[in-house]
Amino acid sequence: MTPELYLSYPSAFLIGLLGSTHCLGMCGGISASLSMALPVGKGFRARQTILLLAFNGARIASYALIATLVALLSTSAASQWAGLGIVLRSIAGVLLIFMGLSMGQWWQGIRYVERIGAPLWKRLSPLTRHLLPVNHPAKALALGALWGWLPCGLVYSTLGWAALQPTVGSAALTMMFFGLGTLPSMLATGYAATWINSLKGNRSFRKVTGALLIAFGLWTIPLMAFFGH
Image (cartoon, rainbow, N blue to C red; front, side):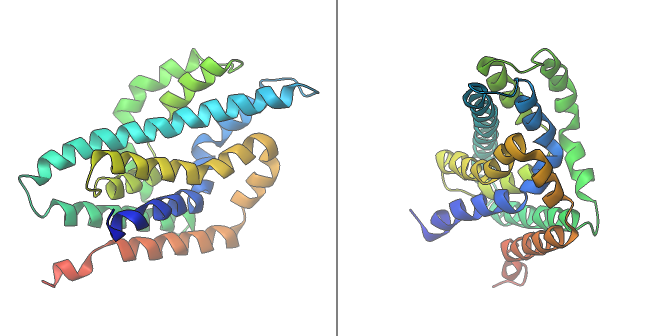
């Protein structure tokens, strides 16, 4: 395992953790609805946990699948274009900067990037309606598997990072660690939606998180490559 590969896993986890308030806007409502689908009372907490874990586990598995497909394509393309790695890393860095600007509420240009996946989501989203209300683990798994394809700038930026990995398996693992980074907030949404939403609306928290993502994006872009070093 190379140092770059080793560092990419905790980095992917950190991106997911820092950007998880963005995930709340995209997926938090679904996660909270899994809790509200069951009555409140003794014996239902375990079922609620199972639904949340099933949904989020399938969502993360979808990220790994998407990374596998992207890695297969990038590996094939890299064999014909030696500079592809620099391009992919640069794109990933720029998208992280866009994500940071969005998190800090300075600029919402990431929404234009998210439109890339809109045509596919337009075909998949009607399928999610047949799975509501989510009152069974099988429904939660199916919904999570579909929800992983929801257009998301944070996912796209991490996919650019995953595509840089030397093997298809490591690309899938990178996205898995990213998904695990989003997991704490997504699970907390189910159990404590009010508290998480207050954190999401905290301007200071969003600005600090946005600044960290921008810094990570700047670090990701291989500027020296453009100056011939």
